[in-house]
Length: 127
Image (cartoon, helix red, strand yellow):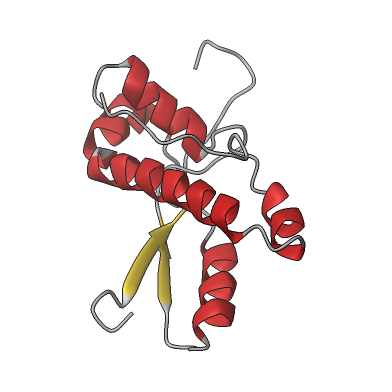
């Protein structure tokens, strides 16, 4: 963490407490990736949009949890750290690509970014 004091994440509280617990240090700064968070818009949805739009053409490793982070706790209690690490690698890669192409996503969705810098979703497909 000394070489990388700042971490980017979609859920900064989850990542902060997970890293703090795992590493035993309190000096971790987790910055939430903006504006790519909003009701119904997950990292999987933004990543899939980058793939569909032809921006990202990377082959991704297989996520043993298929994007369902709630399965991490069950794997942890069963001692299955390999599945947790494999899942985390996929999450980190998706977050990397979203962060790397945030300008593209911001331009594409600028009409839906609120004054606080967050993505505003709407109920219809006409937004």
